[in-house]
Amino acid sequence: MKVIAVSGGVISGLGKGITTSSLGRLLKARGIPVTILKIDPYLNVDAGTMNPYQHGEVFVLDDGTEADLDLGNYERFLGQSLNGSHNLTTGKIYRAVIEKERRGDYLGNTVQIIPHVTGEIKRMIRDVAQVSGAEIVLVEVGGTVGDIESLPFLEALRELSYELGEGHMAFVHTTLVPFVGPVGEAKTKPTQHSVRELRAIGIRPNLIMARGAAPLTPDIKAKISLFCDVPPEAVISVPDQYVVYEVPLVLEAQGVGALLSKILKLPDREPEYGAWKEFLATYRREEGSVEVAVVGKYTELHDAYLSHVEAFHHVQGRLGLAVHLQWYDSEDLPRSPAALERLRRSDAILVPGGFGPRGIEGKMLAIEAARKEKIPFLGVCYGFQMAAIEFARHELELPEAHSTEIEPHTKDPVVCLLEEQQAVEALGGTMRLGALRVLLEPGSRIAELYGRGFDTYAATPGPAYVEGDPRGAAAPRVRSSSQYLRDHLAEAPWLVIPVIHRRARESAGVAEQAGLYGSILPAFWSFMLAARARGLGTVLTTLHLPYEREAAEVLGVPYEEVTQVGMTPLAYYRGEGFRPAARIPLDGILHWERW
Image 1 (tube, one colour):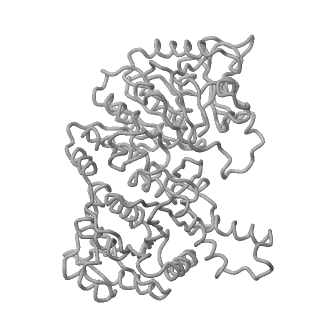
Image 2 (tube, rainbow, N blue to C red):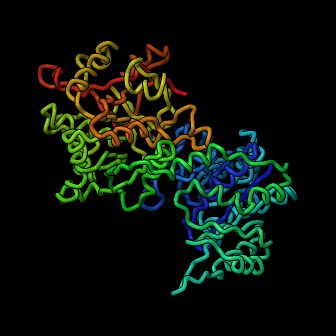
Image 3 (tube, rainbow, N blue to C red):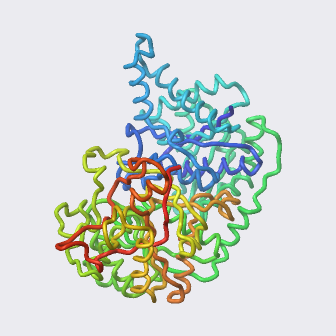
């Protein structure tokens, strides 16, 4: 096992995740198997309950782990699927140590930070390496050197370097070189202090990644080299880039791949960046452009919707179509007629996820505008739920339609909690999350886009509004109900309401070849084609998972194994029975199975 540890200094938010991902890309370009993990020094067990304003979006992994957004960067850069073991937190480490202490695993010894906590950290890193079979493990340490919270992790990595021996571990330190004054003079003092802090705890960096607005001049590199005791060629300038996927090539141009090969005693191999460079060339081409309105409640912090942003970047790299995002605060939209009018002139509208009542009326205003103006629309997760409510209110004449999450006693619970979830009180890790295999109806538009099937993440869909009992309705009735939506929206250029969280991935193609895996959705690029051809596309009906009992029969598994949890569109009854018109018809998916 060989390890590359990436730390950060001066300030947080320097782009350690992009640096770590780019280093992994350099190694993969040389045919070296790698894996990657993130250390977050907060006490939360995972990122699932954290405010997006503090840490950006929650990235959901195949196994359902709610992880730091950098895990999304790792998957996109490396073209690999990760799981919960690739995100270590202080909460996760301490919980494991305390559970061992309670079981008596420490045989009566006094449990301490050293060696027990640091030992647990090292064990988890080794486990990731062993299970993945990777030759090199990249470890990103969150936070900033000098923080109390990160000290046990840095100490564990220091110990690990001695245990592995020379040629088996490299330390990469990311720092800030600010440009200040009227002439923009580069200041190296913050970097000097940061490296001094790192060396004080016994770690000497092999490479320094100097972040800044502009490239460093040779004399500034020489100064950092002198005061930080690293060779001049090991001071790497990483200026801001037009798009983050440029960074691996910026590092390669400065010899980082060769340096790592030398430090870790790796074979000298020529890197292969053909597909990566082709992607960037297409991205820069910008043949035409579209404006996409993103309507959410965290729009001040774009990282809260990072996977969506990156999906649009990948669309641009695949189609050469410049995608310009226009951000709309869903709370402000109802009281800003000018903003709503501008939104109506958008080429496409995206309503992403986000729980809770804040801003929902603004989201439904945007959805109504998309429906009435025939603007290509994409609703994801909570955006799907809001679209179901909006449709029920204005097209099915159910003015009180709502979600029971927001209005527990609504007369028309278009979106409501499943029975299996009624007794759940905790917040963390209580939703059904992770990869699900979804099989699609042959001949449907969604099948045309994705082929026979695709993966969804944190899907929380349920039965549609269909005629009859939703638990016993036959599949032909499910399919026939979709005709209602087709007829009603026959002239719509695009309508897709996927009940997926963050992303779905295609199994092959340019994205995977380039290592840009997991973020380019066929739905996204087809959505953008519809935006470009505004008014010339055809309707794509909403994604839907059928009734749980029917799915259980199809799959031959117990009903309990297929029931969904979370807020879900459900059929409901009114008065003398179910109203045939009061249905939200959905189409395309035959059944699903757990991975």
